[in-house]
Length: 341
Image 1 (tube, rainbow, N blue to C red):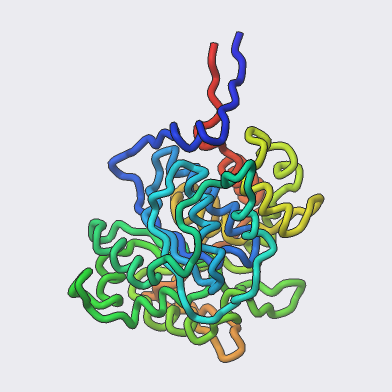
Image 2 (cartoon, rainbow, N blue to C red):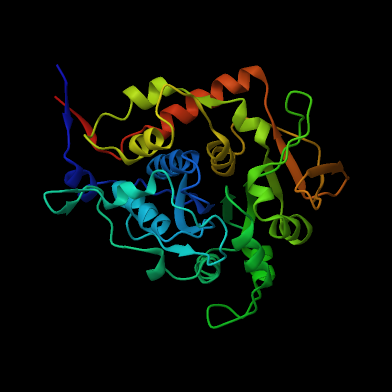
């Protein structure tokens, strides 16, 4: 006979176990967290994949310029027992408005943080470019995967950065030397209901999206708007699968963004899933080519034999598999639910 023991929140954060594997992929998560709740669920996916030994989250950099986002990100990492992950911020002025859900980071119980975190504000966080340069410089050549699920601001700025005391290499040289794959949630490559779609992550910083497409030196795989739209996250999971703690930051963020019942598209989650597990058959790929971004923010993929750019495709069977994988990963407890005889 087995019974389930639920750890308290404090116990979860003190006894999270990570099963390290020598080939765990180093991952940088570049996000506009705070603008939509899919970024939050994507962080849950990354942490679950790290707990399973598939990856190591080496940095989170933020492209939403609002000071609460960094503290909220630190609270999520701390919830999963990884409060030491470096966090970098941009100071671009892009989407500075208050988020619908990052305010939960200020919630308290009896004078204590409901969601513990050390970083209190983005004002106290280092610049994203410095965090990116340090994270890349520390890893083996050709090993790093970046999942960019917000604006291209930080990575465009990285490309422009000169050598410094972190590394004599320019940002372009660091990316070329250290990055294996850039997985981007941006653009739209299949008409939506027969119409062209101008995707949010591109439109909010068109100039940076142009730089990324034109100058990034390694392979880029785009998860277009149509992919996450085709894989909605079931509200029933939000309502039922996160109740192993009284206050789950992923569930609360989702509900504050838009209360269930609603099935939110999994845009950012799909990009993360492909970034860490590209060979599991969750998605198909377009032919190699080159993506261009026009002045309106429209993305176009032209097939070229030696092109570095592809975009994800999805069959009906893959849609079912991806949905199940994302539900299981994003709702996976941080080793806080233990089976005991």
